[in-house]
Amino acid sequence: MLAKRIIPCLDVKDGTTVKGINFINFRDAGDPVELGRQYSEHGADELVYLDITASHEGRKTFLDLVRRVAANINIPFTVGGGINELKDVDALLNAGADKVSVNSAAIRRPELIGEIAKNFGSQVCVVAIDANIVEKPEPTFRLNHPQWIPQWICFLNGGRISTGKNLFDWAKEAENRGAGEILFTSMKHDGVKNGYANEALRTLSLSLGIPIIASGGAGTKEHFRDAFIEGKSDAALAASVFHFGEIAISELKAYLAEEGVVVRKISI
Image 1 (cartoon, rainbow, N blue to C red):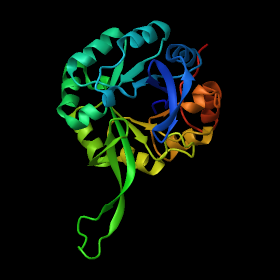
Image 2 (image 1 turned 135 degrees about the horizontal axis):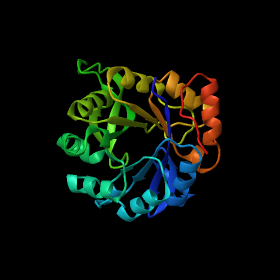
Image 3 (image 1 turned 30 degrees about the vertical axis):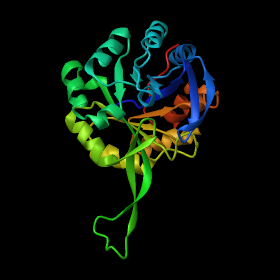
Image 4 (image 1 turned 90 degrees about the vertical axis):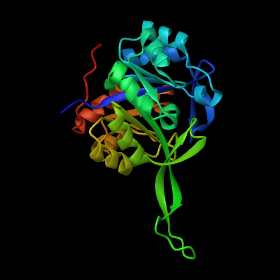
C-alpha cells in the first residue's frame, strides 16, 4: 500500500501566506518561504503553493517566490494560480516547482490538461477543483412541481463563479484528458474545521484511477484519519491547523500510524 501523504497548503496573496474561511475573511499566516522551510524540516511529504488571486486578477503566478521556495526546501512542491498556457508551466518547472495545479484555466479550456500531460508528463498536472453543494432542479422535474436536489458544482476564480459543471463528471473528464491527480476542495468545509467532505471524497476515489487529495475541513487529527479511511483519499491537505501551530506534523503522523494508516516516516 502506498503511504498516505500530508500536504500543508500555503495560499499566497500579495507575497504573504493567508488563510480564510469558506474562501473569504483572510488573515495573515506568515512568510511563505519560511513556513515552507519549516514544514520541509518537520516531516511534510509535499507542499502546495497557490497564488489565490492570480486568476481573478488576470495575471501570472509568482516566479520569484517559486525560486526562493525551491532554494529552501527539500521536498516536492506544487504551484497553482494564473497558469493558462504551456509557457507558464515551463517557467514554473524551470524555477523549481515539481508540479503545477490548474483550476480555472482547465475548466475554461480543458485541452490544457492534455497539453501539459503530453509535454511534461501526467505526474506534473494536478487538476484542482473547488466545488460546493448547490440545490439544482432534477432533470426530469415537472414544471409545476420542481424537485430540487443537492449537487456538487464546480466553481472557478477562487470560488467566485459557478460553472454549472458537476464535480464528479469534471473530475472524470480531467482524468481522461491526462490529469495525474485531483485536488478537491470543498468550499462548504473550507476553514470550518469540522472534517473533510468524506462522502464526496470516497465517490471520487472509487470512481477514478488517479490519486485524490482531500482539501477543506481539517481541524483535528481524527479528521485526517477519516479522510484516509472513510474518504479513501491518497493525501490530505490542510492550512490553518499547521500555520497556527494547532497540529504538529510529527504528532499527526504518529497518531495516524497508531490508527493503522500507512504514512511516511519522518527522518530528522
